[in-house]
Length: 215
Image 1 (cartoon, one colour):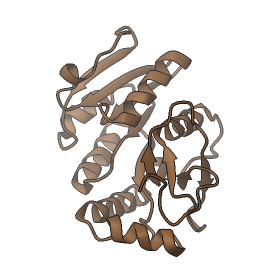
Image 2 (cartoon, rainbow, N blue to C red; image 1 turned 135 degrees about the horizontal axis):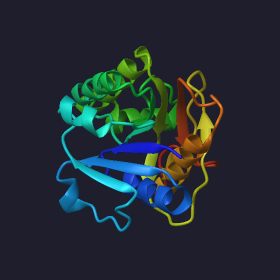
Image 3 (cartoon, rainbow, N blue to C red; image 1 turned 45 degrees about the vertical axis):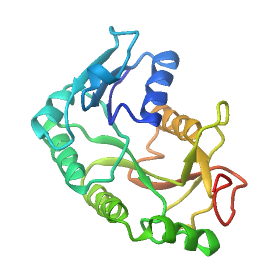
Image 4 (cartoon, rainbow, N blue to C red; image 1 turned 90 degrees about the vertical axis):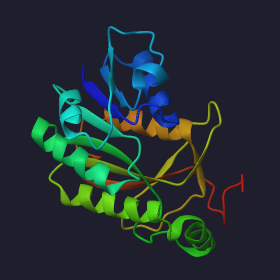
């Protein structure tokens, strides 16, 4: 049994992950979010602790990481927040982290979809923050799994996902949040070091298109 900290716990994938952990594991969960107590409704308070806090508050993060085995970061769109999280993990003595990023941080998306993706997000400040956040995580001594997510949508029951490695061209124009949640659950459940210190592209099989179906 583990103790898992979910940072950015009000996000859609974070909420799905919380639900899956509660229903399919015996792990205890710490949910960290701004105004989390107001925004989150938790039925099993024996296994769940809610911490109100900001990613930039290192002391609050360190407190939330007490006795934690694994941290899940739901968003790395602010490099200052990412640095604070990494520093807090060092201070708290926590090594294992799964972090959600986006496709394109290595310019690894080829073809028409790669060009479309660059037009949509390639030069945005948020994308630059994602690039810098990933660089900081990979240069740390943390035991990280970085997830480069393609374009997200919701479809109940669709948990199909495929993985591309860092040195491979990214494939797949879309993936469900349900599938990303399943991927995180699979990584949490993996007892080997298969997913340690790796950057994985996450997409839906058979969606190697010029853009997502919902655009």
